[in-house]
Image (cartoon, rainbow, N blue to C red):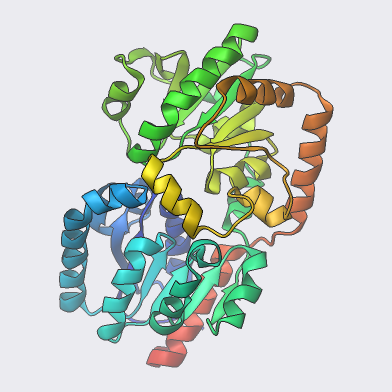
Length: 394
C-alpha cells in the first residue's frame, strides 16, 4: 500500500558510492511514496534525482583516523546544519547510507528527536568495531544490508536486520559499454586504475599507481592506462598530486597526464571495457567483479592511521570480493607496495592466462551468491515499517 503524505524525509550519503545507492533508493521510494520529499547530504547523482541539498558529500570527503581528526570542527558544523533543518522540518524518517563515523553520531541525535532511522548498507562493524554494534541496536529501527554473510552477525547481536539483496548486481549486470563509448578504439589494451572517490585516498594511492603504470607501459608501451575521476572531483584537485598540469585532449577523453588518460565519472564503463584493473579496496572491488574484469587490489593510508586500523580491524582480507568468497580470489597489496609485482600481476590478468580464467570463474560463483532487487525491497521495507509506526495510509 503506497504511503500518502506531504511529508519530508532525510537521506544522507557520505561518499560517491553511497550517492549512487541513495539516488536509486530515492527513485524507488518515489514510486512507493510519491508525496514524500527527500532532503539530505547529497552528491551529484542524488541531486539529479531531485533530492534537495542540505549539504554536499564533498564536505565529508576524508578518510583515515588522523585525517578525520583534522576536520572534526568542520564535520561538527555540518552536523549542526543538518540538525537545524531537522528541528524545523520534523522529517517523518531518516535513511543513512553507510558511512558510519558520521552517521552514527547523527543517528543518536535523530533518535533523541523521535525520528525513525534506517541504515541502508550495514557498516562493517563485524570487521572493525564490534563494540559499536549497540549503537545500531539502540539508534536504528532497522539495518538494511547488502552483503549476505553479515546477516548472522547482526541478528546474533540483537540488531533488526534484513538482507535486501545487492544493489550493485542490479546496477551492473545489465551494463553495456564499449571502448568507443568512452573515446577509444576496440582492440586497444586498456587497464583501468580506480584510486577511490575521496581526495584523501587519491593523495595516498595515486603515487603508487603512477609507479605501477610506469612498469606496465615499460613492458607493453601501447597499453592505455585509464582513470575515471569520481564525480565531485575536479582536475584542479588532482594536478598537484600528479605533479603537472592536465592537458585537455578532447571533450570525450578528458585529460592526459602522468601517463594516464583521465575521464570524469564512468567508472563502471571503464571497468567494463578494461582487460584488467588496479582497484583501491572498497565497493569498486565488488563492482569490478560483477562486470567481469580481473583485478589487483591496492590500498595505502597515512602510516599512523594504517597502524591503528591494523589493530582495530579483525579481518583476513580487506576486499569485498575475498570477504564474500571467504578466500583469496584477488591479490591484495596493502601499504608498502612493490609496484613491479603489481604491474606483473595486472598484465598477466589482462592476457588469456590461467590466472585470468581462474579469477573469472570465481567471479561467476560470487555472482551466484548475490540477490537482485535490493532497492525495491529496501523501499518496500521502509514504507511498510513507516505505515506501521506512523499510521500513514491512503
